[in-house]
Image (cartoon, rainbow, N blue to C red; front, top):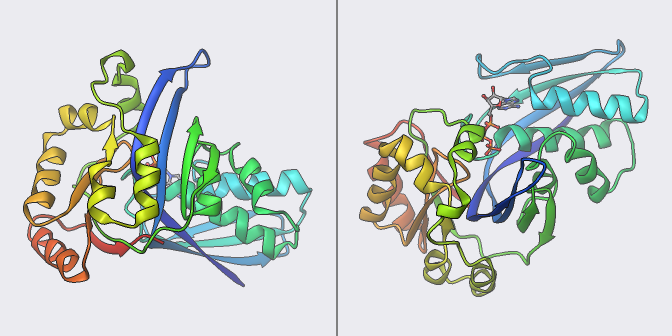
Amino acid sequence: MWTEKAQAKINLTLDVLHKRPDGYHEVEMVMQTVDLSDHLTFTPVEQGEIVLSCTVPYIPLDSRNLVYQAAKLVKDTFGIKSGIRIHIDKRIPVAAGLAGGSSDAAATLRGLNQVWGLGQSLDQLAELGAKIGSDVPFCIYGGTAIARGRGEVITHLPKVAPTWVVLVKPPIAVSTADVYGRLDVAEIEKHPNTGAMVEALTTGDVRLISSHLGNVLEKVTFSMYPEVERLKSQLLKFGAVGALMSGSGPTVFALADKEHRATRIYNALRGFSREVYLCRFY
Ligand code: ATP
């Protein structure tokens, strides 16, 4: 048996540069993993099948699950005949903008690399992961990085001080494809300054980092779900140094410079929302 953690990610910046001829958006994002994670358990079995189980009942356990897709990809790529049972202990909110599915897929690639002794480097696993989804390569490494291209071109950044984060997910599901579909790149008023964020991260100064938070998808998601914007305002009202929506939402997060401030925001938000999490950069 082998276990692997799949960390959630937040976007400290999310910029869309243009729409590409292949239909994808060219993005530039500063990504950060946090210590909120799904736990995956791998049990090898004789027969060749892939069998999934999950603590959340409504997540599909067939080929629609990114974990299934990752396991199938590994089996096919390396000609593995034996099978695997994978249990997903789900702690990352689903369809939240936290890349839960992509991180599970990345953890599956890392886990099966160990279980089946494939000897692949993280770079090789990231290359494989890009076939499953654009966020998977970043999730292979975790930490802090810039993601460019469709999100799959990774530039690693130095480790950042373990800043406090409060995550809050309103009870709605947002489709990433829908949000990108409604984005008009020509209408973007303010692009985040990726270079300035990278600089700020080297200082570990939460105020400076907060001043460069930016996500061009906020406007789109806020117009569809005004409650997401209200939640962001609440985080700031309760003492967040900075706040931003992650990915295409609907999760918003707050940054705090001290544990007691983060705890205060966490406790205040629990009155409004069932899904609130206190965590740190990881
Ligand atoms: P992103 O930030 O990359 O847009 P997300 O956090 O918004 O991702 P996910 O939690 O990854 O969204 O899940 C989105 C959809 O993918 C769900 O509707 C779910 O049914 C499906 N899915 C497939 N595999 C998984 C998985 N292992 N965990 C969660 N959802 C999965």
